[in-house]
Amino acid sequence: MPPTIFHKKADPKHLQFVFECLDHFHPLSSDLKAEFTARCFEVEVRKDEYLLRKGSHSYYIYFIIEGILTGRAGTNTCEITSFISVKGEFVSAIEGLYGSASATEDIKAEEDAILLGLHVVDVECFTSRYPEMNIIMKKVMQLYYQMAHHRSIFFRIGTATDKYAFFLSAYPHHAELIRLDVAASFLNIKIDTLKKIVNLNSKKEDTLTLTKKEVESYMESEKPFRQKKLMLTQLAAKLNMNSHQLSHLLNVYFNQNFNEFINTHRMKYVLEQLAVNGSLVQYSLDGLGFEAGFSSRSSFFSQFKKHTGLAPYRYLKLKD
Image (tube, rainbow, N blue to C red):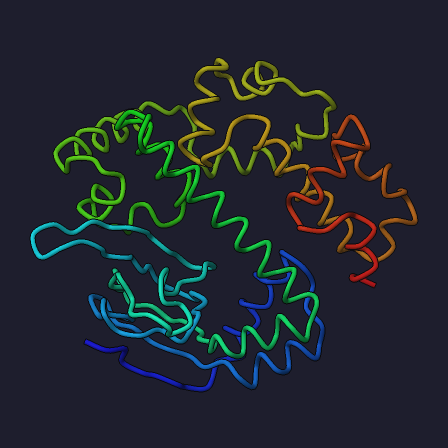
């Protein structure tokens, strides 16, 4: 079945979401946003409908606002899930992107989806006229290439358990919404094997001593991350558990290791302080990083760019 609604005017809230996603790679100019708004359209694809069928021609790139879409490739006797795309990502034909060749895969909605579409001619126009769009598309292509390269290697040498751990890490907010048969096909794991791994993982979650909400509440109220060079054993002691239990808890609840978890909270603290008018009157930018728990300027600036996509002073300039 084709998409339910095609070429509908984009909802302003959905446009803002796309702009925020693109701004993560590089800030968009007001002129580009205006042209983007004028040329894009909204699409609704119901569960089990196809956005694109194998053999047809594709002329659009889509930004996923809501929903999960999968690529299906294969023959009449064998079909595999070639990719899974979720909210905040792009989706289009892998081959024949510009309509010069027919698509080699189906693109199917695994749940009701909302997309914003943009004609590839407009994308090419934007990249030639707006330097920031050229930068964004290069960064997006680099990111997707790296992801595909990592996945191709990891899926060939990793165990079934390793593959499922990768799946949880790659889709932390959507893993439970993706059908097991789709996940198994994507990971190249037998469905019965995946069911056993999922059941074992659920039993491990039952042994956790604190809930996710309790951990988040403690981090918010006590702010232990502000301690410089905080160690896993120290935070575990504060939470009345051993380091192995805490490491497992962070992996299950947040899909992060200890350092990623702590730096995420440090950056959240920094950005909250920057959102308060006059915050830099009390602290210099470097001082704010030290106040958040970073032990060096280089580590602070590195994490700042990782979380915002911008160097600190560039971020402040755009904020002003």
